[in-house]
Length: 231
Ligand code: CTP
Ligand code: MG
Image (cartoon, rainbow, N blue to C red):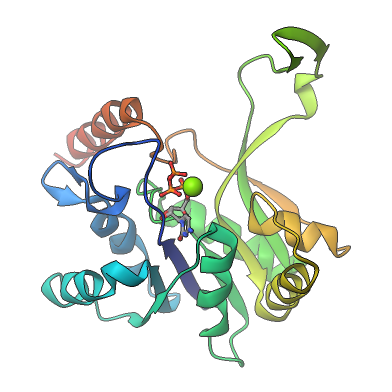
């Protein structure tokens, strides 16, 4: 099934502290944003891509899209101070007659076509689906350096992007959340809040978000491993 993709890339990468936003960091000679875009550019089911950048970086993004000759990037729009606002700006530009929209962080460059397919299939059936993996560590709730509770791990999943939704569902959820001044930590949480069921699709532990400097080490290892598989 065809889909559109919104890629929020308007953050500042404060936790990475690399001197540039995360999408410009090079991994094995290619910017993170290129690794991320390649997968959607090459997927025949992806109709179009909306890239969301910070106001100061719009020109840089336009130049980047031209230089790397991405043909599916239909709009490059200015984001907001919160990720949720950036995503909403992107969603507003998805054509109204589109069925499914995927929202995928620019800083998650190891997503594969296989997992996109699985996600799209599920969202086409249910209206909302997210990729996630079972949590491996034991998770505790801590207050003032003291354990309050050990949470039953068997029901805990770490949620990733892409997250896929029927356009009408996610657009309405973002509109209402903005009206109410409600900020969620992912797009699914907005959809959940307005009563929709969100399906979980088994993701991949390699689909990490580059957040801190040590993620770059792991990221390089993932790319080298994939290159080895191809060779
Ligand atoms: N993002 C965005 N607009 C914002 C904040 C974040 O489009 N106002 C994007 C980031 O560019 C990133 C994705 O959302 O691709 C996930 O956010 P995160 O990992 O938190 O990235 P940053 O906000 O850049 O990093 P930090 O929170 O460490 O500053
Ligand atoms: Mg952030």
